[in-house]
Length: 410
Picture 1 (tube, rainbow, N blue to C red):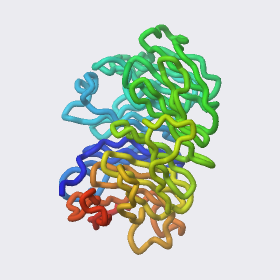
Picture 2 (tube, one colour):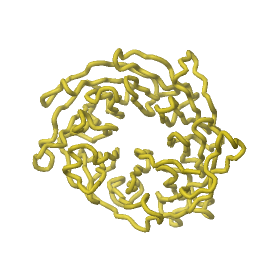
Picture 3 (spheres, rainbow, N blue to C red):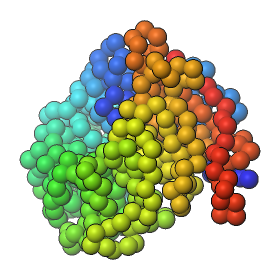
Picture 4 (cartoon, rainbow, N blue to C red):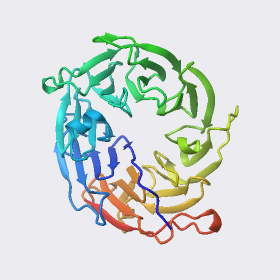
């Protein structure tokens, strides 16, 4: 049976670890490191290529304070093709040291400066047409800034294109809608949503705001699909039409509180993580009181990390040693395995971070006994050559989800 095709997964973030997987790179920053918390980037090359697990990586120092966000962009963008050659992906990191750094060829190549405080988040996509040369960032000062990646100013000082003002609290989430690459959605810590037309913004200071809305509760995540924006906050996921800025529906209600959120637009599904369980929702069902299509329980503690692709859902949390794999269409449990090294479960904590590409899963766990294992331990599991992957509709009784090759990096 064929295994799942490769899928690029953006970084899963937690309070302790940032993680990103690409077709040929694993990127990891740990806030437990002895130097400034979260100021290092760990590059594990060829982690997902070939038949062997990676044996070593490179620790890179550049930021002087905590790394707040990591984004990985393909070199298919015009600017990246000219600057980062040889099929390199480009990593973008933001930090509390007021800077943004661009990485390729194994090191920091550019530094964007010009903020008046910590950079809190980065947009999930580049703005603009096919050239894709504008990066958006959000700051602790409540501003949204647009950076021209094609600028040639010394040390990135001329890269700042526009500053968008309007938020009164720190900007925590940024997303670029699929139906209009010049629009930018921002959400601040006070759960206020703004939509910006970046093509109409010019000059050092600009409003550029074309729509506003507000949601209720602590922010969890945001996903844009076409003209709809799904915002997870408090205990619900709200769908907002970006053309009218009106609430379209409540896509999910997960009591008492949401901790994580992921979406799969190709199958009109979203997944929410709460206490002890995750829930699967069909966003095509416009109900006043939405009901989940599947309840996936069995976790210990809250579910902080969710990965979704057309074949599987992978879930885990910092209070649970076990990562669980579910079938996307049915929510049936397909596999469960520890996020730490076998035989060390009693001295290990739960899942700090994870990233998934096709049939390969990377997890990071932490240690309950200082000195026994390094904090932020990275474990690689490869299910590519599984003899019995997910169960099929023809054989629904087969739910065993492979034995895996296993390796770890200490």
